Length: 392
Image 1 (spheres, rainbow, N blue to C red):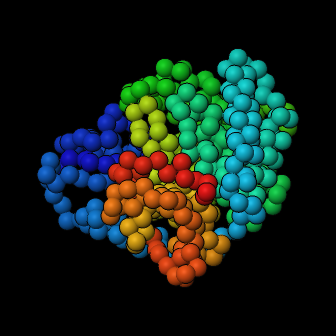
Image 2 (cartoon, one colour):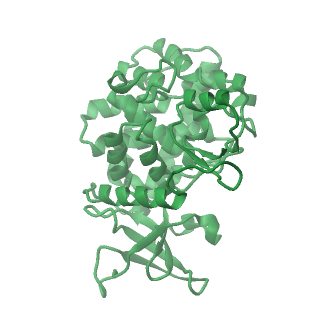
């Protein structure tokens, strides 16, 4: 058979390519041993098999996602435009902190926990005011600052996730600290591997896989570090089917917070552009996580995360029934299928239009009377939805 897609995030498998001809039992075993349980095959380039088509599988996933949407979310306290400037400062502050931590770890210096706590607090306060602002800003990363901003993103997402589940404030702070420091072990990975503009060899992949344990060892020497933060650092790459690393834990042997950290870590990784990996739109990434939760993640926690960020997360490009394209700027507090959308392009006329904020929960004459048909990839329409994140 010809493998068209390995259904896992690109950092979770040791193969040089994502697409290749599968021709021996040894190759089949390698796929299975890597924890991959679902693959997409190209029947024009290899043997066919009785299986649902890509379209059928996508339709089934979408139907399940629509059911998940029937739950309430917490409303934002302030408008996204009001929070963006403060969120930008938090983003810079947190990224600088992670850079300093990585530099200290590389030099063998002890990590100071004191400066981490106020940064996590600032992230938390921004999330409580309007989670979409900081999350939206963190979707944009360059290859030069990816490692640092990925840690800030995982912190932001995990803090939001914990709050959405009503967890204790003290636990949320410890989880945020663990998330901000979770990739400390990457300080020991050579830059040539970390920023390699191509697939990793198996030897390089093995070095990358050491970073959770390396980070755990480094942080153990930090006075004041909590067991929650250490657990997240060591176990954010574990998978519930036992296919993760470094300890190959499975099921309930993985803590709830480590399971949550694993979900947000993969979500941020697969939505980011890397040297040889084009990030996918957030809405598509959530649907992938839902598919993978059958084996790799706790399905109930994935569903809770989807309700936390919305099945159309802030910043998602959507196509409306009217033919307009818009960017999601705010989820609805009780209906994830009806967010507020800033429309700016008409697909039937292929022209930009005057931006208009559409509240999809309202009726005709009240700024609504439209609905989302699909989430879209901006590359398909050659548009930049980020320009329209703040309604005029």
